[in-house]
Amino acid sequence: MLYTVGEMARFLNVSASTLRYYDKEGLLPFVERSNSGIRMFSDKDYEWLKIIECLKKSGLSIKEIRSYIDMTKRGDDSLEERLQLFEERKKM
Image 1 (cartoon, rainbow, N blue to C red):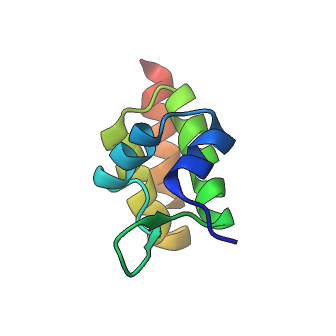
Image 2 (image 1 turned 120 degrees about the vertical axis):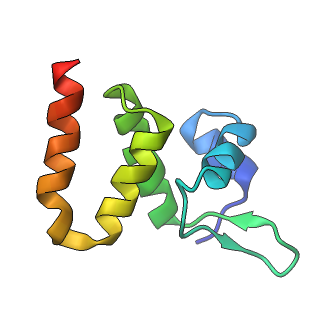
């Protein structure tokens, strides 16, 4: 099922502008767009957004979250690198 920015924002209890910002910052690389350019969020995007929420709560910056997402795209090869990201954050 697909959801608009407003619908997804309500599900997550965030503003629509927050989701647009995340998309602009490269945190939502898989969000589809309709023929008219409207963002259409899927259930998988919802899962990513919940992960982003957890990463933010852990203290990661937007830049670090983007880096984490890029690492996950590389698959299991980046597991050690992802662990290091959290270990560095824990030291702060």
